[in-house]
Image 1 (cartoon, one colour):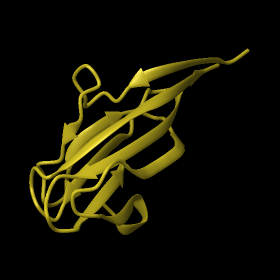
Image 2 (cartoon, helix red, strand yellow):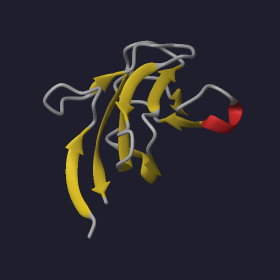
Image 3 (tube, one colour):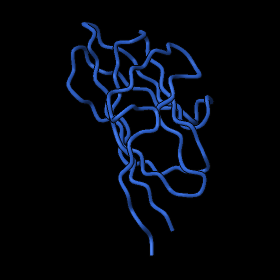
Image 4 (cartoon, helix red, strand yellow):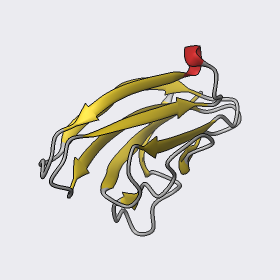
Length: 114
């Protein structure tokens, strides 16, 4: 029977927001998935800048097929970015933004073990 546990994003300290400092690939580390456990990833972002900013999330690679891009509105509250995408295999999820140190990321992982 599978076991579920809620886990803090590995790039976070005490579940504080992860500041996206990278402005190009490879981005700021957000989370490293378990090797064999399945991590269901949930991420929200907020933008403290006065300008809308593009955010790119990289899912274990930097090719176009491994990324999603979205715009985080200026001075926003939490904007849903990743809604339950399952990953494993020690994949590293990273992020970069159009401007350094204005987008923060929070979230969690539902870790599913067999």
